[in-house]
Length: 474
Image (cartoon, rainbow, N blue to C red; front, side, top):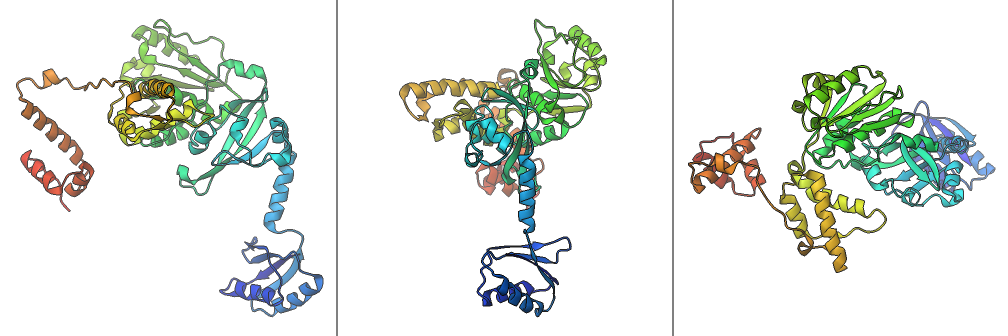
């Protein structure tokens, strides 16, 4: 039996209500507080008889503040659940929810049919079993991408997947993500012939976290977007993510064009909507860039333009002006040393999506953290692939130092020109002074600097005094 009690909001009234049920030895299995005006108490007592309810009703009215007591058919949460469940069962597209580990929590009949299992067997199944290329763990952890129009194939049938994150709060922190709701829309096979880029989850570790959040905001806008960064920082990945983060991805195409022999040809016949990605514009000479700039002026405004280049200065003014509204700069790996071990482990998991990836020894992680990785993710990926091959030949489950290729460490500073006329000691003192000068910027305490460098506060103070540098002390 379900009971609704309308009462005043005063301290202790709920305790007095529950005490009455305890005196009549009635077991209350669940309850809710709320109602439209916040003055309702809802209780579920499955074993309560009608005669018991009549006696309890009289006792409840004697509690100061109780205004109304009545029987109801469903608790509000039960009603919402049954209404939502009924709506979902009548939705023809597969709809399901998953937790942060990728396990299916609930699904409708259409999802069960798409997966080829009975409805009662769907809860608890791993989504990765049906979508092995979807990178579920990264998708749920990395809810910056992809969100709309994700192309997948389930048991030979083509779908476009839209998903919405379920967050515990509105902080935007990935740790608040409890799971996601996915909707799979059937798609014709011909829709996949447009050259859709492979959807890849963005790794939002360290400085890339802020870049991912910026991308999430910029993808909803219509102005052309320029993605800049060094080779291997993921410019193409972020450019393609613009398409999958845009709601238009569920109904529009994405065209990618790369330079060939120093030229870039934009198709004359494009759909009036969609995303057009122009990659590596810095590889084109000035004349070719001017030709692209003229061609872009004639494109429909409903086409979202995204371009990648090493830096804006590599573009001629006419083309740079076209992409002057929105830009995104990707950080190189050497600027994210604290996250380098995490990037390496994530790369290994990507290489082994269906099995347990080898473990990286602590010495290997430390070596990876110290290297500059001038080719960024491209270099790190190839380095790990070579180490992985050696590890597999040994039949080991841990990548050790002996599996690593030799790293050729070369500094980018022009040592010969810069150090002319200086002794080794003078060069090292110049470097130390420059390093301390840069580290002091924005700091109000030399103790904070000493803690970061792992040396004593006295040692830092002596060095600052030696080089004539100063900082505010706390």
